[in-house]
Length: 70
Image (cartoon, rainbow, N blue to C red; front, side, top):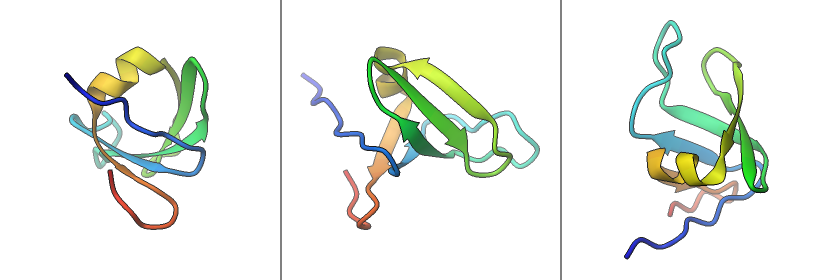
């Protein structure tokens, strides 16, 4: 059984697949947390709002603001 990742505002999410922007960044910064999570691409600045359940399946690693990884 998978554990639920702890996601907080300001965290960096590394995704399994790259964003389809020019350089294809896999890193996104968390802007808002709730049943929907708002993230922004670190490369192009595109803002996305995704359901938490769908987003959790796409996350490879969570990097917290203090530098620790989950």
